[in-house]
Length: 345
Ligand code: CP3
Image (cartoon, rainbow, N blue to C red; front, side, top):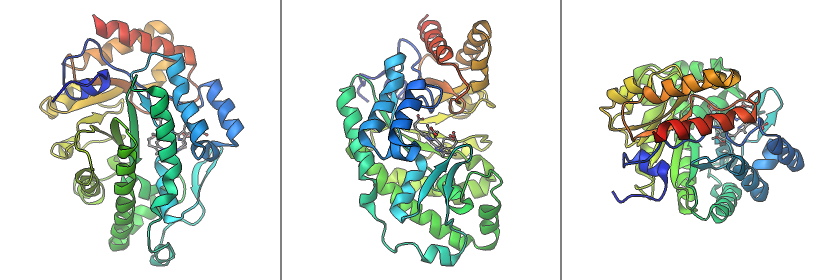
């Protein structure tokens, strides 16, 4: 494999790197005052992600403040619902809401019979703008949600975290659940390839709720569909980063064609890396809560995280989950600085 100009990509491919690359999940977000300002200008979160100029602007905001090693497309995993004509809106404090969730055959049959693939063209425009601005100075990560994780929202209708309806559907009408997962998979395959053709340099699959499933269900309801997406990618050289929260079935990820696995804070990087025979790169996993502590504690925890990974390459530093609005931007500056300094030694 020829070496990339980007530290992040080289580390994913286990090439020699002179320090550990770092980026932060939700790095463009509510902890940044400039983000709030642009979001208000756009008239809210949905207005922001549907506006290619402003979505590009907020993508670049954290890069202007910090020496990060990657940009990530500013959008959301749930916009894929546009293709099924399901209306996504966000409520303050509540998060995503679908007013007509998919809970029965009738709900499913009421969706358009053909996916409207043109609906996400605003994302293509956003990627084009970001790529122009970055001018290859940093890589751009594109992303989708896993069909399973997207389905939890389409079926529950919001982020209840109880998962009552989808669990019910698994027991009582798994055929309908398969049809829903299949539809999301078809939309996602198209969407992934669109993002790749616009030039994303790496691709992340957020399977946030994959950890809810037992080993057998994990394959049948989540990984099986992810495999289909991975094998339908037009370009096999774009590395894939997979992320789920509270996962206990890491062995299942071994032969999926995944290049890097994002780890939440409740796992040890070294343990999981060894489980993968040190062949799959890891991303993570500082607990976001640590950033509320004083700098000496933050530094100690960064050291611990770096030391828990037993190789000089193959690690991308990140938080174990997305950064929250209660983190002070100065703490992020300190984090990035320390990771750069400590890992260069
Ligand atoms: O990481 C990034 O900076 C890229 C952009 C991005 C967002 N969401 C922006 C966002 C990405 C990659 C996501 C992924 C996403 N979205 C996931 C998987 C990752 C995870 O967090 O586990 C999920 C489950 C969603 C769905 C979603 N979007 C929820 C449940 C919420 C509400 C919770 C919350 O944090 O507010 C969102 C909102 C959201 N997505 C925000 C941002 C910046 C906050 C919206 C705002 O500014 O009002």
